[in-house]
Image 1: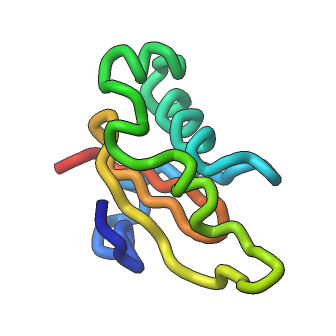
Image 2: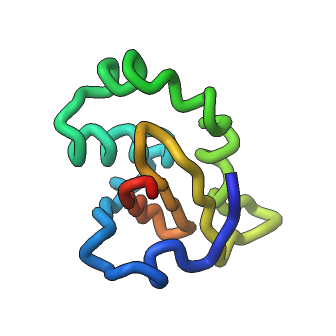
Image 3: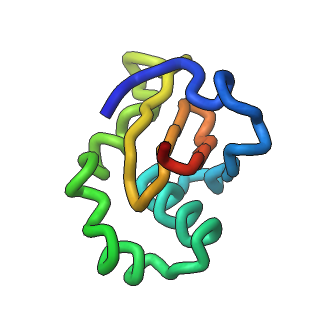
Length: 102
């Protein structure tokens, strides 16, 4: 896992598939949903073929990373990791960007 501010800025924007989470949708679910939509596989096929998401990143930590609390507000940042043949980038807005792994 790495943090970076602009995974797709160094690549042509059309090389990244962008998905936006639904309000109150956990980021971990949004990642699986985005990969399923892009690859044509369903969530169980993704886990069967590539292993569960938690083998790569802690889903609970990902879900809570950008949640605002009464004490703090998460205003910026992103997390990038590789899963299911994609470089996955999620940010505080709930955007999930997928790019083919190089």
